Every structure is written in C-alpha cells, then in structure tokens.
Amino acid sequence: MTDISTPEVLTLGTELTGKDIERIDRKIKDLADIFSDRQAYLEMDKSRVVYEVASFLPVEQGTTGGLFYGITKIMPGTVGDEYFMTKGHFHRKRDRAEIYTTISGEGMLILMDEQRNTWVEKMEPGSVHYIPGHVAHRTANTGEGVLVFWAVWPSDAGHDYEIISENGFSKILVKGKNGPLLIDRQ
Ligand code: M6P
Ligand code: ZN
Image 1 (cartoon, rainbow, N blue to C red):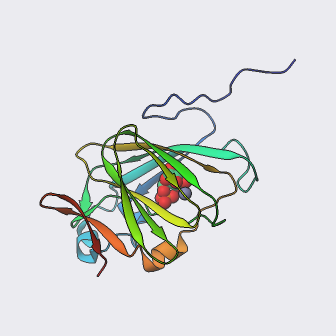
Image 2: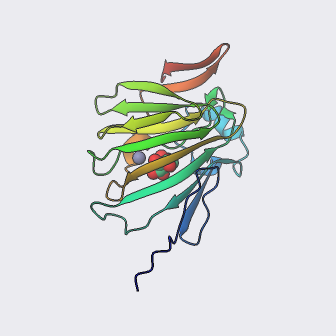
C-alpha cells in the first residue's frame, strides 16, 4: 500500500520542526567578512546569534527538479550602524530563482545583480519576493523584533558565498535617524 501520510508538514509559523530539518546558527564569529564596520565587529560578543536557518531538504543537494524550503529568523541588532543580516549569496547555478515570504517582523531584502547594481525590497508580514536568477540576495532585520521569513529554492541552486565574502554587496543597509538607509560601501 502506498504510504500517503505526509512525513513533514510545515505550518507557516515561526518554527520548522521534524526529524529531517537541517539547522544552522550563524553567530557573530561566523560573519567576519560580512559587516563593514571592522572596529564595531571586533567589539561584539562573538557568541551572539545573528540568525538561524531551519531547512527541509527532501531530496539530495544538486537534484534537478526538486525544491527546498526553510525558515530564517534574524535577530534584531546592529554591528555599528549596519543591521544584522544574512551572509548573502548568488546561486551556484546562477540562473536559479527563489521566493521569500515574510512571516513576521520588518526587514529589507537586499538584491545585487552581476553588474553590482544593488537595490532593496521592503519585507513585512505577508510580503512575497521573487528573486530572479543571477541576483545575489541577503536579508536584514530593520525592526525591533525577530524577522522571520520562509524561503523556497530549487534543490540544484546551491550557495555561492565566495564573491560576497570577498567583495560584499556594493551598498550596505544602515540605521539612519529616520529609518534604514542604503548607502555606498566605503
Ligand atoms: C534563506 C535561503 C537559504 C539561505 C538562508 C540564509 O532561507 O535563501 O538558502 O541559506 O536564507 O542566507 P545565507 O545562506 O545567505 O546565510
Ligand atoms: Zn538563495
């Protein structure tokens, strides 16, 4: 008989639980090349968690035609003036797209194309963001609470972090007097 029970069910909320969930914590110590204010970075508690990712990977990495999904939670905070954010990546298979849906909190999706043009989309509960292929993406928490979003991406997309850790994005998102500001990286 075919087993029609669903082995993993995601309830669209702030948690993703189940036996096959891969969990990654990114702490300040893991984000050395990410934040632009070196001095502020050095003064931070290295064990502080910046974000957590819980992913459901139902097929093997690299499988064509499958999908992965995950919940990311970014804590509120800044390093200097720069908001807590994810490392950011291009997809290793550059043409692969992705969708983000904001569950709670406030943030910005920071996008950069291969010509290093950078722009943002505001993330708020219910906002849905289509990230085209060939566009690097990272998310920043601009609010007082935790930013939680749901991501869905192709199982053969892969993560390419190298370009971002070497050159960053061309712009950074900082806390200004009247809210977030996207400014050129020094
Ligand atoms: C989203 C998806 C994941 C990604 C995570 C954190 O959930 O895009 O694939 O891993 O954000 O982003 P990063 O890998 O850049 O730290
Ligand atoms: Zn991605």
